[in-house]
Amino acid sequence: MQPPPRRADAARNRERLLAAADIVLNSHGAAASLDEIAKLAGVGNATLYRHFPTRGRLIEAVYEQRIQDLCDSARGSAAAPDPGAALTAWLRFVAAHVTNSRLLREAFLADHPGPADVEPPQATAWHDSLFEAAAPLLARAQDAGAVRPDIGIAELLTFLTAATRAAPLCADRALELLMEGVLPRPALAPARPDTAAGSN
View 1 (tube, rainbow, N blue to C red):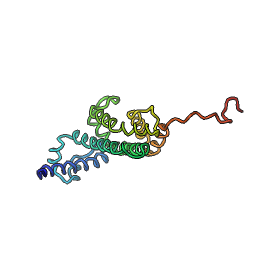
View 2 (cartoon, helix red, strand yellow):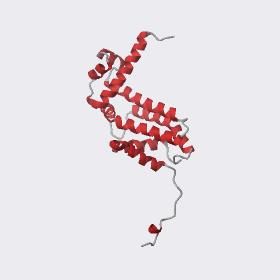
View 3 (cartoon, rainbow, N blue to C red):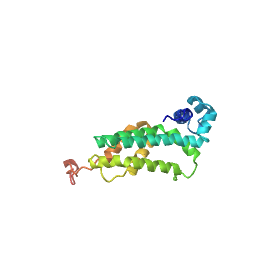
View 4 (tube, rainbow, N blue to C red):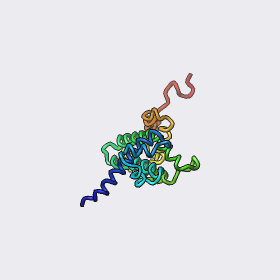
């Protein structure tokens, strides 16, 4: 049975608003204009407020959509034939999200003021969803011997996020160095002659 036209139109309007808000929020952050978002989406302000009664609800919806995309990608990559390459590709997707969501994150935090070391409950829920979706992807890479076994998904994503935020212009390099750090530890090699104890 086809959904009623009004319901289909409402769904399309919501998708347009989320796409427009993603663009505007990532261009202007907390200073983003809701009027500009509605205009870019091709709908009236009344339609925007019908779907998202407050600025905070709109920001959360945009952020949640991004997290959902990351979760869907992780689940879709879990059965890839090369688990190590699949994990690396997904982490590159995460790094791009962190880099491209800087102003969106600022807008979200501006709407949820609080102590810097305490994240809003919604952010905690998003992180939990991401960890749950990505844990099997990491586990398969570890089972294949592509990643050291003593690192968890929360730890891995924390390192990646911190490195990407610290160096947003070289996120690929940050990911490269991170992956070198999570590769399986090689057996200890003999000391080189010129570094052996007692050498001159």
